[in-house]
Length: 285
Image (cartoon, rainbow, N blue to C red; front, side):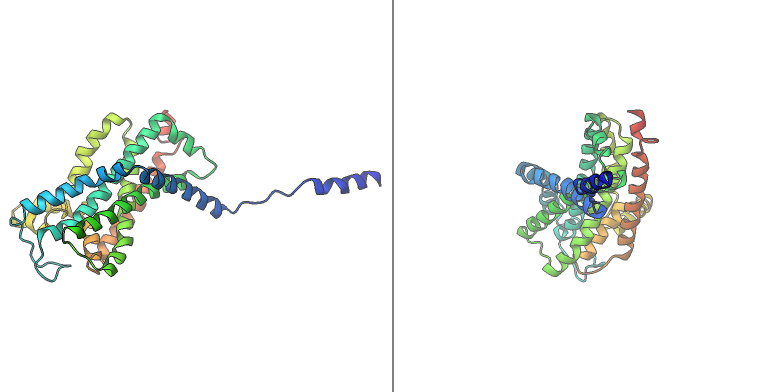
């Protein structure tokens, strides 16, 4: 009886361990990773200014220099002739997402060289979730800069209705996620910071220039550049730009949306295998 009494008194001393909701745990990790990136970005206003210099320079110089060079025919989603600067804006929005996606790739390569990525992947959360959160953090920064650039374009006389902008936001967010996933995939194969310049030349610039970002694709076909026109059809960035362009005019580009969804899943899954400690880069470090 004494032993039983002692054990009865000992039971209240041990509290049952509370089970943490796994989705709540993931949400906290998401807000921590994404919030950290956004907070760090907002504390560096010069970083935002430098990120917008490239598209703004292209917008001002090309809009002025090629104003009367490129004739934009009446093609969907446009129902009338437009100025060249109006045509450029969706392409430059895609440029922001593209270059920021590659910037996030550079950041991942740097984190890997400094050992930060190894510590992140040892956190008490599945590797797939951690990489997804890093991807969403980079996409969030891209979307923020794209929204700011729409405001800058408004100052230069390029107007979109608020309803169309709201419709375009999910499309732009999907574009940011796709290009961040491309950057994530690229970070698997770029082993050192010095090799990133090669990635810029062989990945970013071909994707940007062989697309309808700066000129409609029928111009390529009309000039006899059939092979460039064909390459543009296989360029995922082509569908990013077209999906954004259609969304800014209240229309849905189904092929562009489907391409971005499939491309995101494909790049993410391949990158996830590349970051596998048993097969990917971590095995060699």
